[in-house]
Length: 216
Image (tube, rainbow, N blue to C red; front, side, top):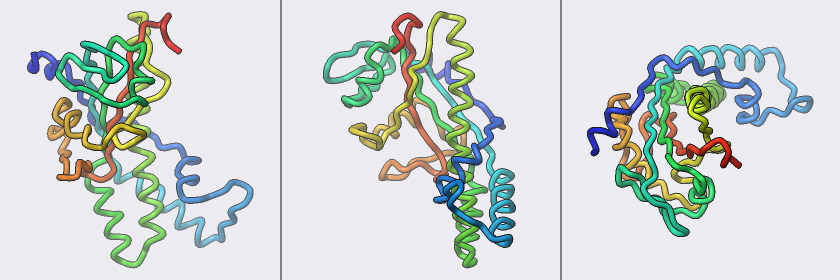
């Protein structure tokens, strides 16, 4: 059964993920109409954003797994993963299948962030960090949009939101099971003993697949 599920993993290289500029700025504490930048700050901002976008190499993967059983206390997938989380259960209450997904922007941009900070250029490092974080999220958004187009043909729809280990009452330790299910080592990703993803600018998420008439 495991091999059957693994054969359905979809991997993507060179995801055309474009980070939203307003979210990059918001993450940096920029407030529209309030924050004022001098010319030097503006040049630094633009140069660092361009550099961050150039260094990010978004890749990702997803796997759709049928739900084996769901109760008031847990949800069990057909590949053996069991989620004990009230928050996730609320999201997946009407789901017949679950999408496990992950994205990373690679090691190069993370190394650049560390380099900028080590050279005393913390501002540049912070800007590139924001770009990398938003690009990783944008890569997930790209996969979500692709999945929606595919599923709508089957009369299905994704849940409006996605859930990640470490959020709410879903322990970060679940990243290990999802990492294995997606075989993320194929994307040159790894996991620390404390279940943190490497490269740092990587994300794992969970969404539900519902029949279109059941979507809420």
